[in-house]
Length: 96
Image 1 (cartoon, rainbow, N blue to C red):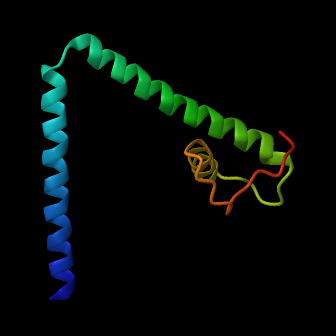
Image 2: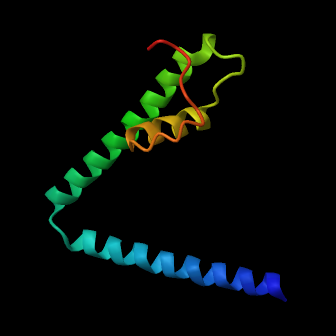
């Protein structure tokens, strides 16, 4: 019974999240198309920079590590570095 209660809670949270996303979409659809295009370009550029940097990091670190740096680890390292949190659990080993 406890696990069903937890699942029901997550369903409610998922529906609330969906409603919030629909609300944001409704606000964006009523906004000026130039602003919407600019927001899209900025978000797409940021995501592209994150993925390109992660790919470059994975390529540069390929010869310096004992184990291969996976893409999800490179993405994690890139996001943590960009956000200036710097947990230190994964760090680059190359001199770049």
